[in-house]
Image (cartoon, rainbow, N blue to C red; front, side):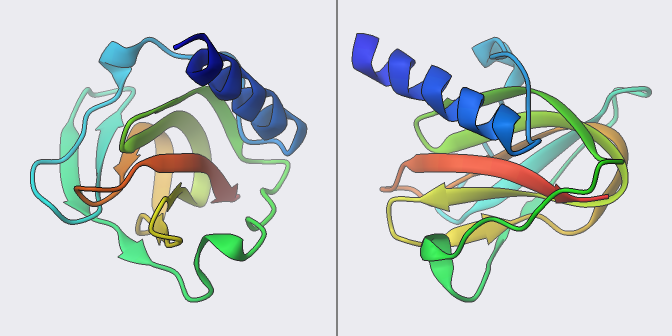
Length: 135
C-alpha cells in the first residue's frame, strides 16, 4: 500500500511539472460510472450539477505522449486509484484523459468552466495515469 501511495504522489508530482495538477484529493471526490465501459462523471463546481457519460478511446493508445495543456487551463487536486483518475480544472475548452492497463487512453468530450471530473477505465483494468489538456 505504501508503494501505491508513493507512486500516486510521484504521478501527481509529474502531473504538476506538466501543468496538470496540484495536491492529492480525498477519495470521496472521485466517482466511478456504473458499468463495464470507460466513462466519466463531471460535477460543476459552481452549481453542483453532476452529469455522466461515456469516455472514448484515442487513437495511438496510452503509449502516445499526453497533449500539452495551455497556460489558461488551471487544474488541481488530482486523484488516482483503482480504475479512476479524477481532477478539478477550470478552462474554456478542455478534456480529461485516463491511461488504462489495457494500453488505451480514454478521453472525455470537450468540457468548459470549473468542474471536478472523474474518468474511469473499463472493468477489469486499472488507471495508470491521467491528466487534462486544452485551454
